[in-house]
Image (cartoon, rainbow over all chains, first blue to last red; front, top):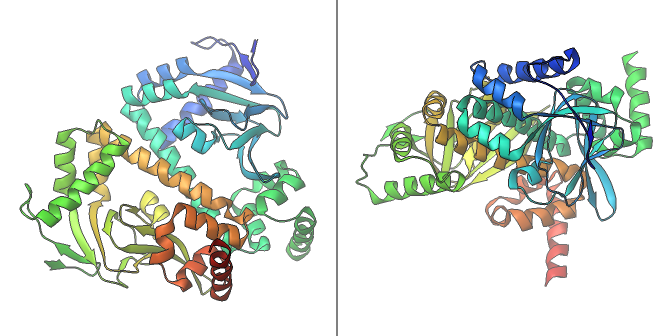
Length: 216
Length: 216
């Protein structure tokens, strides 16, 4: 194991000798093939050879405010939040769970200092590709570039949906969260969830109480 | 001219014989080359050959609720809004001005019925590519696929920024709009702008009054 200031690298061999590691990559490749079934074997081999397996403990920082996000992380297990700090108020802008792509969006795309912090809220394991490798792989394998496009479209739709939350009441936002991201409601602390919904913790508690008294 | 139920097609020849049409395409190609300077001449020729020039009058519908968005529109002039209608309340979710890519996001990506309406708020001229041509061009020219990725990343960042509006006061939203999209404040009616900001028209008027009395 190789410990850096940002997570702990877990060594592995390819072809795989560790079942647990193999399973992580099988998941990653399945997800990518879902977005482009024509992803070639040669691309897959090279993607795997570029990946690092990185483990973060709870409260570890993946990317700090002012750092440049140099890696795309594919989350295997765990929970990561994107935080922003405006005038001393810290807000949970986004949550990424198992299966999600984890980046500090603007920092990664522009390779400039991040206005956000990516923070592990639980023990989190990721497969990471450096931006240089990602760009090289996309240039070499259009089939992988297609995967990248489809993933970006997927998250763009999510962000666009969330941008409509300003039209929704707090109660509606909570109902949408339950409908589309039920896993978050169980995983995320009430404090972080209230922040994400743009309301106070007390108000979230009242909404939950009402919600379950109506549902039951 | 060929009038359809969705805009009026303007015939053109390539190589160009009409200066006005040539200028539209020069703008489109410049924008694409900004995202990928390595876009090849062969790709450019084929992109142009797939394009239609379509003109919409004020209040024309580009894509209606329940229609499938089959074209990507590159706006040359004009103003388009994406509307949603939830429980009889119609809201302006997005505005697209000259230089913008215009699609009904989810409908276009999934090729399913649109939950939104794309409406021209001013006389609007677009260059349009059918989704089938777009996909074929992306498959044939990875350099064009790269343009598509970069454009998607650009709009994803915008949607993500806007998703943070739930953390901002109405006054802050207005200030952000002035900072990032000053053109909208002049182009868009007070009614549509208030809808976009998630506030009443009266409140927008009060914000503007305060804003300009502080600024002056």
